[in-house]
Length: 171
Image (cartoon, rainbow, N blue to C red; front, side):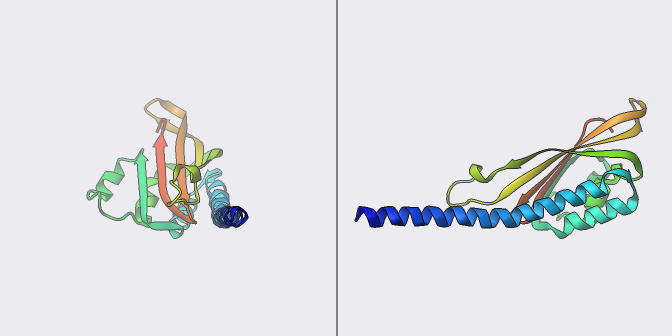
């Protein structure tokens, strides 16, 4: 009886572990693709077309319940007067407009957070957050050619972007 019970526990543990690996491998493939796209579109000279392509890409992987938090662009208040209104691709494009037509932009992936262990055992999800620091030079109230920093985060759960967070240090 003990051997059967132990075998069952080992089998269930193995199935749970392998399922985590299957979910993770699929989600990590999406995370890698998202990272490569963000890095290629936001490095060097960033054009309007780069931002358009990036927002199109991010939108194509976003979930129906995408949350977008942006603490840098006052134009978003006009677009999103109703907090229950769904975010669309145009909204993302306006949100990232601060990066359009910038030179010498650098993207630094500071960390990838793994939130799998934060979920209870019945609601486990493959959840990774990419945390970027995006550096660019801009003329601001601090003066000409001010170094600016944008904290940019993308949360990917089971292959879908569920949240994008932008916060500016100086813009």
